[in-house]
Image 1 (cartoon, rainbow, N blue to C red):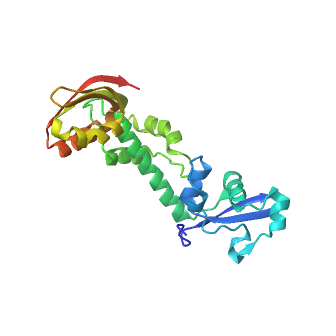
Image 2: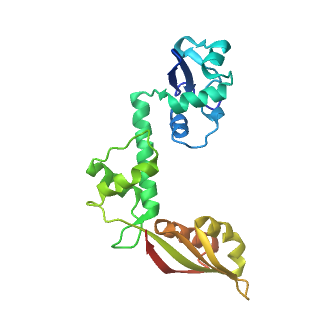
Image 3: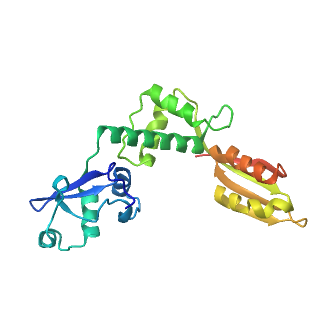
Length: 236
């Protein structure tokens, strides 16, 4: 099993005058509940529907059939996760909150920039502003849904603007093949050209916050044998 029994929690559903429980990974279970396509095999500690996890008393198949119209554990587990409650400890809640907080700071750092310098804010600076602003993070809510709330809260403390940039790059022939996958993964590639001397020239639309990281990767792979310039900035 990929799920740690020590860290697993109970997800339960009261339905058809009965209680149905499963043992799950708390983080993956919450992600599944929020709509992420995580395989149930990676969520369940055991493929069993219990009356009570503490006593390891499994629900008889006839009771599953009567309540859900099926004995398929995965289908029933899906309903429990979607419609039921996921119980977590205080420590697990704290860990999940910290994880969500770091994910949000990472997103803001990648998508936003300091308009005074046109460079991204470091994640730690964003985390400090979140703490200073007293931002409350919901450990159960998708980070995308909490992003606007957090940005509004930290804007009085931290100048921030969301922006896309179009970067034009030109890479020497000997390194063009090496960097191609990095260029493709950075954003939307437009106006790609292989020049007569074998150099690669392309325009890439990307989040302003990842531009420095992108050019640093190019510099490392090409030993500085490339050119780049911002040809367009667009606020979003």
